[in-house]
Amino acid sequence: MARMTWIFSPEPVGTPEAAALRRDYYGDVAGSYWKRPATETEIDEGLTADGVERLTPPTGQFLVGRFGGKPASCGGVLLLDGERAELTRVFVRPAFRGTGGAGLLMTGLEDAARALGARRMVLNTRLDLVEARALYTRHGYEEIPAYCTGPYMDIWYGKEL
Image (cartoon, rainbow, N blue to C red; front, side):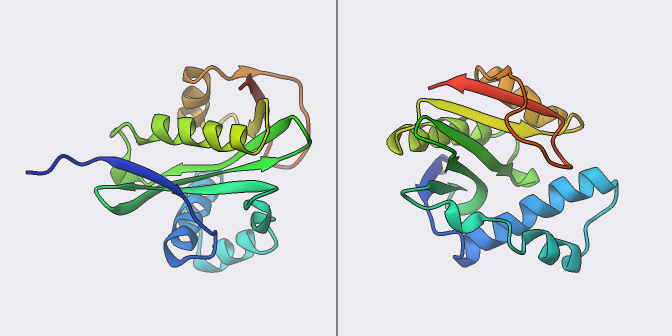
């Protein structure tokens, strides 16, 4: 039997697989916040004008991770200025969690940020996203002062690249 492996590659956000991962990401985080499944209409509304078009060089990058050839994860980096990139839309589909993909995705996103010229990565998240926060701290992210504001931002992290 062939061993399953993770492969990560840059991909335009509008490809069918990237778009499906983005929908799953939004449904997962919104459903967690609302404590109920997000509807298709809510997902459509949440993805409308979300700025994802900036996740392409030279302003950012979007990665899709495949496990055993199946689209299983995604994440993006967005340049905020000449030295900082923001980590965004980090997601592993539930069926692929526990396979080591989240850590590999983090490494790939940090490499993508460095390739864009970033020397520091920052991110914001919600306090209820306990697993995500644990992932970030496992990878060396430390709490920092708020660098932005918004309705779904409770805590901010940063890391020197």
